[in-house]
Length: 108
Image (tube, rainbow, N blue to C red; front, side, top):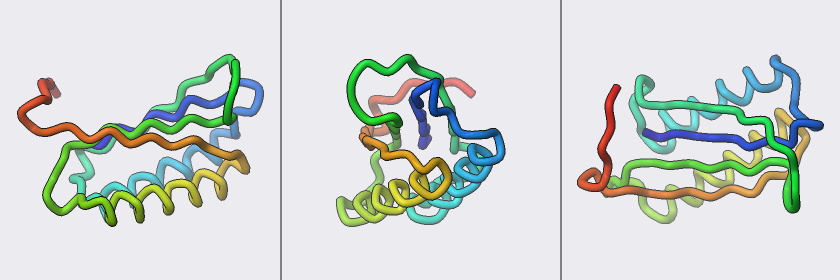
């Protein structure tokens, strides 16, 4: 963890080059601001048929840590919002969900 999933309007999906740049910057944000290990960062893009709302919905799931304070998460979300706009030109709704280690069951 962290896992970043981007649900993007299929009709507005950015180019592979833009998504590669977004992935690179997301990895930097996760390993820098969130202090995640590179091997634990996952970035996923999902084409969606829009119904209502922003053209990008970004969902971040991460492990709660004492150093991931509200101020750190606010800094992360601000930086993520800026990098999404920079690489896609689209407005995003961002939601972060933190989980205690005792509530995470995982493989690989």
